[in-house]
Length: 217
Image (cartoon, rainbow, N blue to C red; front, side, top):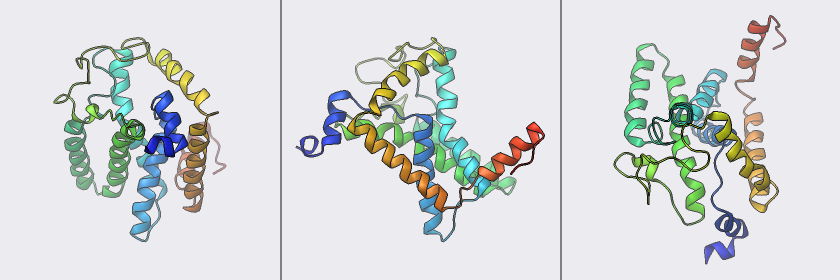
């Protein structure tokens, strides 16, 4: 079997699919966007990279407060659904075109749309795909109604308590074969960002400088 032939996948199957954290989504989004830019003979600009990073977090910035803080929906159903993501992305492009910012819109949308499959890929790796959020509300969570609480502390428990729950699984994972592969992958994408000229760092540095009254960037 594939899982027996690939040790990392075997560990994943035994321990369950790891969650994708914010920095993981940034890495996946940047990899996708940088490759797209290189195919066009370009490298990401600073402003586009910042828009990309915001896009990679957008789905969680919408869905997690709705669940973890306000207990309105299960985590990962609204902004993680293609039925929301596709029309919203079209709207972003329409507004950006009106103001001549299509490059920023493109980066944001790449970041946003890369988030959705990135959440599904770990479960695909262990042969137990969990792709129902992509098609919510047409597809319910297997074995439960979509209105049921999420795993862990649950809906309404708060952002910090839920974050602590998921971090308790992430830290031990770093010391496993999966963790080694994870760190190597992150290092590779970080090296790509450096190769591209570390876009975005100057823009963020200048913004921080304006806020703090310093101008070291």
